[in-house]
Length: 540
Image 1 (cartoon, one colour):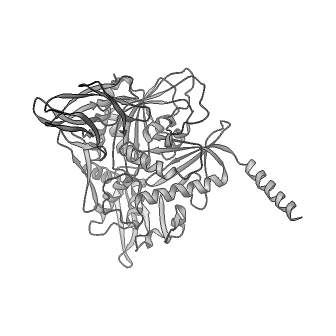
Image 2 (image 1 turned 90 degrees about the vertical axis):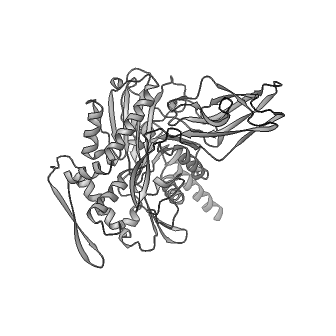
Image 3 (image 1 turned 120 degrees about the vertical axis):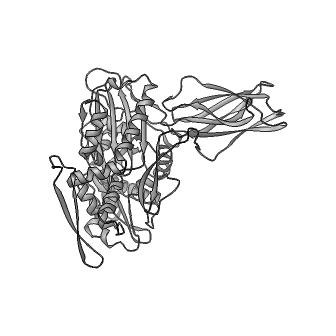
């Protein structure tokens, strides 16, 4: 009888699993809201996945983590329902953590006890746990910002190692937004993704095919595993002609508003949430410039104050903080990179706006002037990226371009000093079809090896974000020759026999593979010995 009971339980369990849907899960981790969308295998329309109690509404999860006890966390809507945001006196709340993932330095405005990478990991793992209990996930699609793509990707690979899923793909957010716009192949789009912590801009060409647009995405193979089920359909590609990004977004606008209206008050979570409400209310369609909206707030032990701001006042604040100038710089950078790929502004068919910040009328009007009244598309601003990321077909790839250039530190025989020599410029398509050959000389007598150091140049006129008294500010990068090492790894090529100063010693061929990794092979020019091939890592 006991054995029969066990058999019955096993069959019941199996029957329950068979009822689950199989398909693809897309997670768009956002600074304010994380979007979760699921698409069944049979090609039905994507669905916003409801994951109570952490969902605010189907598919939308507030990007909030609260450490209630050691290694015990509340997630998303749970924190809001318990009204914990205004009660955080011990830095147990983690919010706006996405912007610091992959950042070399974390500003004191992020004062949570939970490190940003840990907060993001907790959120993704909780979403995975709840989603996989409802549906069978055969493929997971994740999105990443342009500005910190390399570091963010490295973090995501680590986070996803423990997830039991056959296929994992990664799409950069602006490209996913272009896919989510639902346009036909052959069109060229400018995508502005104005999120909570980043502004990304890209020009994407949807190539190939007649009739309706096909799903397209760049499929990344994690941990060196080839993806299963390659598609036999005709290859259709999206080519990223140019892109640029900056680490500033809607959360920073909230801080600007809070500081503008309450300059003598510490910007608590409650004050920032009221500032966000003001921003959203003043961004609604049809709001008059002169209309002033007021929000009541209790601070300093029951002291009542009102935060009041008009639409005109908000726009003046954003202009004063340099937001429009920042967008103008991103626009110029993106266009300049695209021009290297034979693009002209007149080639644009449409402008796609996504992200919560894109709803601010000032942003749309300013970009419209820059684009000479090219038609605008405004898909659902919150879920557009996740929906676009779902449009993924194995065997279909994106031809992409480098967001930043790649330089090699080497010895200049003529000037007798080390210089940064450009290998690939921003806008270089990858994977490369032809290797780049470089001949390197020794810089001293009896040199035993040549060290390869790779860096990425900072474009003159770019903005970097600095924090002054907790407020984000834009600072121009003035130097033409500022180069940042991509990583601290140094590849040493041994010289046997030792080199003499100024002597041409080795010839190296540089190539970018389909994972955007820099590879080299070479020979010793003095004896024709082959140099062992090396992989210098991801350069995107």
